[in-house]
Image 1 (cartoon, rainbow, N blue to C red):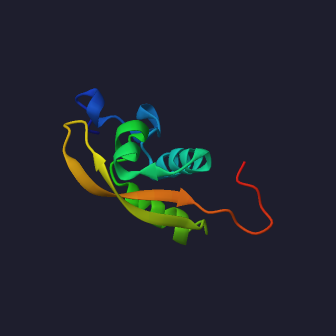
Image 2 (image 1 turned 120 degrees about the horizontal axis):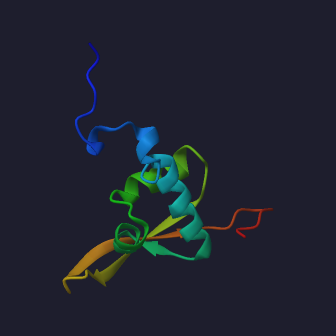
Amino acid sequence: MKKRPTDKSQSSANERGDFNSTEAQRARLLAALRRGPVTTIEARRDLDILMPAARVFELRHREGYDIALYWVQEATQAGRMHRVARYALMPTHGSSMA
């Protein structure tokens, strides 16, 4: 006899959708980077990407994007200052970022 999911949290990925798949997260991050720089805190808070450094790594090394990293001080929602990464998509020769 096959086991069936006992609740919705055990349903398949197709039923839940792929909003938080790595592909969807990379797409959201790339779209945001095309609009302007994004910090780690912004990626987590506004884009729902909990590991933005991993998505940046994938965009750089799997997809070939030139993404610069700058270290900045930024306050969290709790008001505490942190040193965080600020990522910026660099223009490439002969292409448009639009």
